[in-house]
Amino acid sequence: MYIDGVWCDAAARFQVVNPANGETVGEVPDGGDADAARAIDAAARAFPGWAGQTAYDRARLLYRAWEIMTERAEDLARTMTLEQGKPLRAARNEVRYGADFLLWYAEEAKRVYGETIPAPRGDQRFIVLRQPVGIVAAITPWNYPVSMVTRKVAPAIAAGCTIVLKPAEATPLCAIKVFECLEAAGLPAGVVNLVTAADPAPIGDIFLTDPRVRKITFTGSTAVGKAIAARAAAQMKRVSLELGGHAPFLVLEDADPVHAAKGAAMVKFLNTGQACISPNRIFVHERAVDAFTEAFVSRVGRMHAGNGLDDGVQIGPLINEAAVEKVESQVADAAERGAEVLCGGCRMTEGALARGAFYAPTVLSGVVPSMRIYREETFGPVAPIIAFRDEQEALAMANDTHYGLASYVYTRDIARAFRMFEGLDFGIVGINDINPTAAAAPFGGSKESGLGREGGHEGITEYLETKLGGFSI
Ligand code: NAD
Image (cartoon, rainbow, N blue to C red):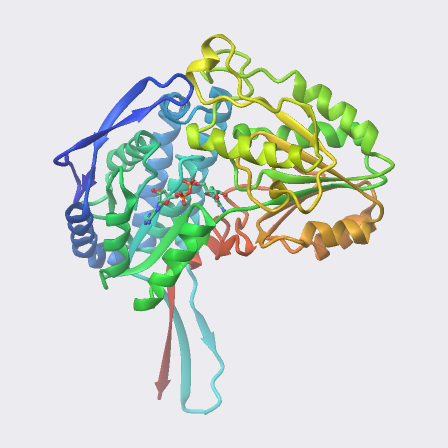
């Protein structure tokens, strides 16, 4: 753990396991409530000094952290593949994306502008300041174990906040390496603090009950996010929540079905489907559905699963046994209710795959709303295909979900593209674009997918409080 500028241990440690083969890849401190409290103490002591630094000083340190992370990218990517399982190429992409937040917020730190407002009285002046909210507690998931950390830490410290982070128990090694980069950049003691723990609940309790913590930023499941938001309300802490998704992927009548199938296969099986923006329902116009399905199944059937460190691997393991069981039960439910399994549909156990949490890339057709997979986030390598008749029907089906994070549309018709962009009730709409994300762009969802945005110029405002000065002159 990294508390008050010092690496420290806990009374106990817990093991980190490679989901590709069950081997132990590391051991980290199993922190508890006292460690979380100590980290908040350190963040509280550091806050006035850090908030008082100039934006230029903070920007310089963030820029240095970006340089260091970029130099250490390969080591970070290998660590990610070992503890999380994604193919090394994908891990390298994530490290680059993660580092981008340090660079972007090094720049945004200098653009925290206030406002002057014309006042109703002649002897009155209004000035608006934007100041750091204070001490931030952050909780991150395992599926993007580097970028989810920098997407919170970078804007928080750019704004002048200090922070305590609790990473997911499956992927603490990546968080440790990110914090090593921050330490090497020369951040003052207490500005960034890291508490690793096998059991998140006691740490969460301290974050939620210590009145000095003014902001909780959480990425993870909708269930935990709701519980955190409810408890944060007791002290009116500010919250940012990046939660689950159930992305629709629409292939309209005029789209090239083969091109769309390529895009759908790439985004659906990214990170073995363990992404909050992973398509969970693929809607294809009835005239395009046969051509789409043929091209899609042919691609998916050729995907190579294995240990992400091996060349040519496109599909890594799921994070653990529970994740495999969830996928198995959703597929079984769909099959029982009449879905057809066009490929995959089972665990992978050939050779070395038997030691890991591998599930075959799967395509289902004939999926209907009564099936669990139609509404529940799968977080695994299963692609349900649903045919539709007209655009309005497709839009209504796409919006028929409690989630509102990402959505995708394939069309070559500009008017249709606009109608879909405006009509889809999601925070992110990719139009013929399967990667509508970047450090410079706001990421986040509506409905039960969360509150607030990360990235872009909006990302830093989540860590700023607005203060009005009224002057009578
Ligand atoms: P999770 O909610 O189980 O865990 C997320 C984090 O919360 C982990 O660090 C975990 O230790 C912690 N946590 C769990 N219970 C807690 C408690 N009682 N108190 C405090 N902390 C607690 O989710 P997960 O399985 O790790 O991640 C998968 C989910 O995250 C999916 O639903 C996915 O869609 C979502 N996700 C969303 C985004 C986004 O930006 N919207 C990005 C990545 C993942």
